[in-house]
Image (cartoon, rainbow, N blue to C red):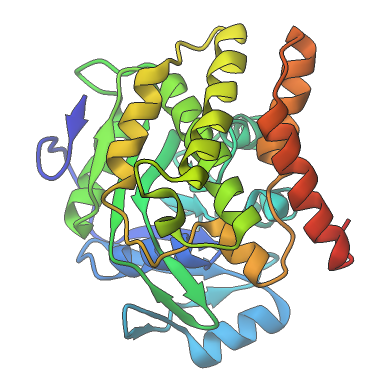
Length: 321
């Protein structure tokens, strides 16, 4: 495993074109960091009233206002060197065709969204592109209105499904770009395992904090009941993942708890933010998907089933399901 900064060096091209779709907490934070890099020129993909609002007001990240160039999805542009897809999974199907003009033969794509299928969907639609598997962890960014705040951007893990030195050219290239922007990263030997690790994390912490409409503080006390429910939901993911041939174990939960203890206790997961704002959640990506996989293998997942029922009941109250 390789960890940034500065451990991988490669040839860089001045003013790398970066296109970002999705300027929520994650997208805005990464766009701002890359915008501050001397090597990157950041463009945001948006349409309609959202595009006009971003042109007019920009977005403020940790108190600094950023006004990125904004282009409509149907505007023909030169393909980007890097496309960052940072929408929620509930918006992914709509966003996927909107990046078409930004994809070329040499475009690297990373998806900063939850779930375990987005990169495969990008590759299927844009076979000429170079999607890298990626996860973020240890991030506590929150967006309220036009303001994004975070105390930790954590790290991003990325790479091919399997990574050994010397790393593939797109992996080295992206590592250099992140070094220039001060973004911390890790290149894991087994990215499939890491995708499932992040999936395990989110299925527990996102859903419990969403159901309770609470910040990270609710799951941080070592003997707390909310933490127990989170871990129980994650153990169900371990069992289902093992049935799917993924090498998950209790050690993966332990490594998450070490990350959890470093997060800002007053910050909220993305799913808890969605519930508080009465927006559609990603419950189908988490509990819904685990329930379907579990049924295939005859595995009981009562905790995720209960979380699914609670969260979908909330959404029904808002007229969303």
